[in-house]
Length: 157
Image (cartoon, rainbow, N blue to C red; front, side, top):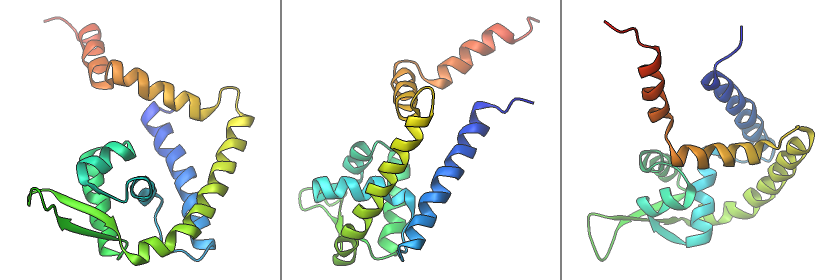
């Protein structure tokens, strides 16, 4: 039986994230792969609101909020009220987060090499396929595609 797209994607994420997580463990780091988009955004920006982090990281705001909360709990981030608007929260790395960066950057470089080797072995590079799928879904969401398909497959009363 052919697996559905969602099942295949979840399995691919398990294979990738599991290996990346093990690389962090092997490097002696207590760090989760899901933290990387936030860490990279803060390396680039130094401090940012949750909304800015979500945009820079290319993730949803709820995902950014959850990830920041986990990272704060582990001592990697400081979250403080913005001076301009007390409702906004500004996020930045703690000293512990900053000290972790050189180790993370070495892991990220190894991961990039591994991803490049995977792309090289595929008929169509996975990174290009994913970028194209994200761009196409930005034009017309998967939800719109499902609603359109439902109109075609639903029996008429």
